[in-house]
Picture 1 (cartoon, one colour):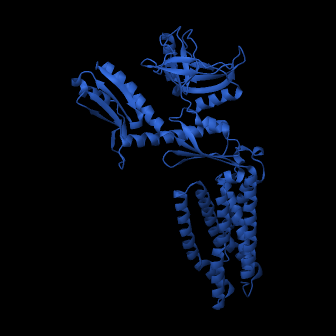
Picture 2: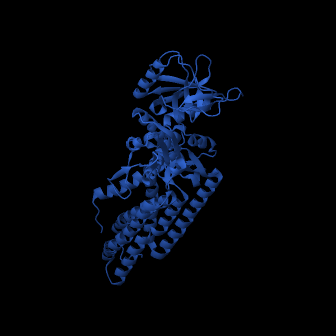
Picture 3: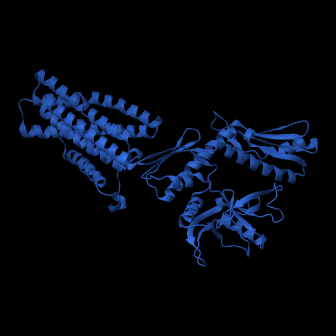
Length: 533
């Protein structure tokens, strides 16, 4: 009981000093700290203020894109196989596309050609088995129908959400918003919390744009003023310039170069006229393809299309082999930078729509912090008074340990760079009330041993030794409960679970080790005949 090896004492004091050092960065602005020391507790949306967005992935667009790609691939495959067809059309609402073979005898050959376009998708309930994502059927009149399976819809939807999640994270990181929370919610929704962002309109604009950039040749024989475009051509609007009505372009559907092959995009100013532009660079694949297309089509207009809108359609003057290009338009500094951010982050697989939006002002956050600190101070005061009145000097030793408990909790949260929310403050207050349960068990056991006639040293030894098992069991069940809350709970619930779990681990250490060290120092210094408990 009275003996602590020097290395143990040094280790205990070292933990306390380390905790104090980790708490210090929370008292000074992050900007004045070096990068290695800037470990602070971040304030969540409900404490700092900011914006809350709930985005939904347009699953209809995911299906529509797959059906359209199936149409293009089917058209190419049938022409290669010399199979005549008619009425090739897609029906995204019913997740299918169909066509009629002119010679019914070729229906099976056409169906086999379409089946080769299927992609494997996981079978529900199996970790390894796969199945085709389309089911192809034929009719006696030569009609071939390809329908997306349910497994395909689930797989493509899940993939679209995961890809959108990563792209949203990259786009927000590019804007400089720090400590944003981005998480998947449900089947097709993404939760975005932006602490400190009071006007989310720019972020909404960035996240709502698909930002798919493609390069197409124009069809110079098609008339954009006509009602319906010819096969393989689409009529797209250009940008509005100088208050004039936007031009209309006849753009070939075939993608000559995909924006997915961009390696970089930066806003800049054209040295010739000082207009804002977006300079882009292709990767090796994009550079090779861009050089090939421009070499074969000198003198022809080449359209740059962003989200189904023609940004610019310059004429190819000479082959472009350096893998670099420039997008000019009616840009200013902000819009050029936003387009560059979108291109660097990549294109969304499907549009995102805002289904819920909330804004928390900094005043509400300050009020929440004030209320949390008040509850923490009031709780600590009442707990201190109770322990001091109920258990005397040993109760005040427990109070010292409680102060260090709070210090170490803040240090642990700082080390983890955790985000503190209102539920997190509730967890700290709850831990404050339960942190002394272990000391109460120890002190009650010491009282029982004293009443049984044990000497002070025997009573202290029995109190700390025999109560340790009970303390470990009670706190272990608490940790299991917090682990379940963290595993299955949402963001605020996870914050509560983290603070309570950290507090539980720390209070076990302070109750059984730190208080024991303080009591041993006191006993060796005073050698009391009666314990003040």
